Image (cartoon, rainbow, N blue to C red):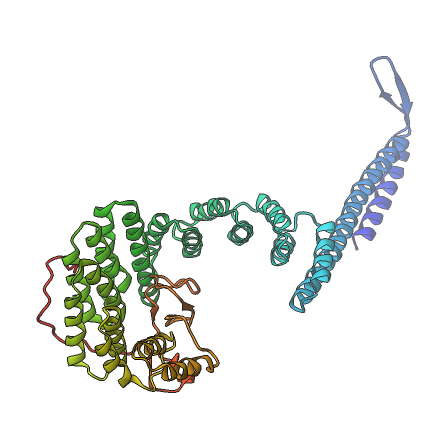
Length: 464
């Protein structure tokens, strides 16, 4: 429509020019410069102007149409390119999910060949290289992605994971601190920093991060779980100060741990060790005895036995065992522990009389059978000793570790406040002897104990 309008206007202009040219036949002097001029009839001048205007209009519309064509071509090319990039990326995702790692890497490299600034492809390719343990390449790709999108938290977390897996812990912490500069209460970054400190035994630093984590607005359930972690960290900081001889700081952290969890055994044992370090052996014994009465945990009995024998007061330990048995005379662990103490004190007859009543008891550590075999030998009954030892050797698993984790079932030969397998605190306990079958023996690592009032113990040094 516009074209016809333009043609009609042009024809009308020409007709008008011819008409007015006939009415004005005299030439017009047209000055081209100060020295140059020419005579032109009006009709030619009008036609020249009309032609010039028409040419200008054609050029204007032509440039616009060409520009529109170029824009459309570029848009089409960009769309085709984006479709190809998306196709390559989708193929890489499917290949990765199908564990076709080489194909996934190839598809992502095609994406980057078309678009070197594609952060999504850089991120994915870096994650694949990290899973394949090519940490340096993963770090290079994620740092390149970070330079393109400085504030992208996903890229920062991936880079931190690369550095952490490459055991470049300080650099990983620095990247996670950069996350906290963008989001000061980001719990994921705090979790990761804390776990790195724990992995490296930096208990003081982990404790400081845990304090920040507990202020980030966690849910009630998360607060309970993280408070348990805080209890363990306070114990570790206290133990570290105890090893360094900083007794006042050790006392502070042990007390704080017990305040958070009154049933936290490692801190109570640590507090007793602190009193021993200060030379207050009697007070340490009273503290552990009171803790045993409250918790019923046999770990305190073991510590008390060693302490009283070191103090040269085995009678006190015998008293504790006898009082405990008077309250629970069917507890095989107490009988076994007292029998072992009798044997340790060379009270052979008492040890034999007590331990021989435990016939049929399944002791995973093998201590009962070894002591009974030794007692029979001391009494001259070698045949019975050999029968007992033969019975132990014929078992599928004659000897087991004396401690087990109540959380992950990890077995340990020595007690510690933290399980080396799952990393949880206050979970290592004695594997209890039982009159059940061997298959059921290790299913129950700790029997529930209902503490009763015990008027014989009063310790002014009890931490809580």
